[in-house]
Amino acid sequence: DPWDRLRALRAAAPNVPFQMLLRGANAVGYTSYSDNVVHKFCELAVKDGVDIFRVFDSLNYIENMKLGIDAVGSAGGVIEATICYSGDLCDPTKRKYTLDYYMEYARQLKDLGIHMLAIKDMAGLLKPRAAEMLVGALRKEFPDLPIHVHTHDTAGTGVATMLAAAQAGADVVDGAIDAMSGMTSQPSLGALIGATAGTEMDTGISLESVSGINEYWEQMRQLYSPFESGQLSGSADVYLNEIPGGQYTNLLFQTRQLGLEGRWPQVKKAYAQANILLGDVIKVTPSSKVVGDLAQFMVANNLEPHEVVESADTLDFPSSVVSYLKGDIGIPPGGFPEPLRTKVLKGEDSIEGRPGASLPPFDFEGAQKFLSGRFSQQVITDEDVVSHALYPTVFDDLQQHRLKFGNVSLLPTYTFLHSLEKGEKVFFLDNAGKECEVKMLGVTDALPNGQRSVLLEINGEPRVVSVQDESVAAEGSAAKEKADPINQGSVGSSLSGVVVAIKASKGDSVEKGQALATMSAMKMETTVTAPITGVVERVAVQQGDSIDVGDLMFVIKGGGDFAPQE
Image (cartoon, rainbow, N blue to C red; front, side):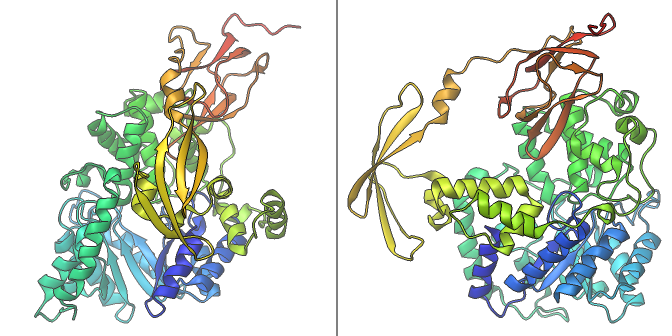
């Protein structure tokens, strides 16, 4: 639970300022929320330990920023308003995100009564010379406003950029402890400390003082080695594809999960193409997700940019793309691309202005009663209600996991990630604060239904626990039927993922373009629609099924010769 973690960190470090990212009107989510949800979140975040809020909007949309800034100010937090950087100030041919654009946006933010100004370079596109230009101009116009610069080291130029920003007048620059730095992370803190030692920019921090912290994180990183992306070096091609550092490794992992392994170079190329198709947008959560979803969709379906536009009115685009073009996360600089927007929306209404302005207030009292009834074994806190408001499915999954497995955060990291081998022991403190010793004695062979018995010794007492071995069912499952590419009414999946909703049943009459199901894959949702008008003759999947690209989902009888029964 992130709220528990925040409170634990605050208790352990009561005198260290804590900073968090706030996605403006998107709070910490991927969509717009009711205004009172954003305000309540900020109120609780301040109460539980956050001091400084780096408020940004994924499109640099000032109306969304106003809400986030107001929410932080009302809660008593420090407002660090953010300019999200894209493009290249050093390239005179790139005329969308110019110095004048950034300066005008900074003036708008300053007029909102902010405390600090941040430059958020999500992809590591801010070159040293560009940092001098931007920070220098901001410092000249706003001599008393603290300036904080953030970048990623994807291309390997992060340290140089941070030094240039500091020399141009930045007050704070971000770095990461050496063991966690470089590539898509932040530039090395140790390198920044060493490079400025003995100069007018000396940080006052010695390398010796951070070496112990670095050694700790070197060991911690080893524990999480199974989750490393496999990336071995920086990638200067980020100047071409503009993939944010926080998205780069996630997108690489998602590409593998979607069955596109081996096509990563194509995904990176498609990312740049998708960005242009969507209007050359600022790319940071959630707008970066929109671009990434479209890029993977293009690669999975072997689509070139011109084909996306030409066939937009017949394609089942990822939900995030449709939502963006409707205006659900705000208005991008320069407006939405046409005719793509009109074709994708297919007559759906779009949103003008700030999306959250038209949303009704969230019913916190009603949600409290609902959650208290659903999870009657637990005490529902204000933080729980806000988590439910922001991420209803994720919060529900967390509560269900806790009911089934208890508080697994008490387990040591290695045990949680790797489990116990026969004869191994683990020690930890239980919920009551009492020491607990668990020893693995053995595991029985799997039954035909996949059940295994795990034999444990808990504080000297034997215990047997039954668990489901999912791999047994997977090994015995038959290959799924594929859609017939020749038959228009044979509807296959356009991505590998999970069926989260079935919206049509056998015998239903459906119109071309009508929603049949919703698919989800690594946070990317796609609505599967009917390619023809007709009657659903067969539903080949169930909610919760995991399926691959091309697997049969529906069979529709119809098409040009279809005539509904009288």
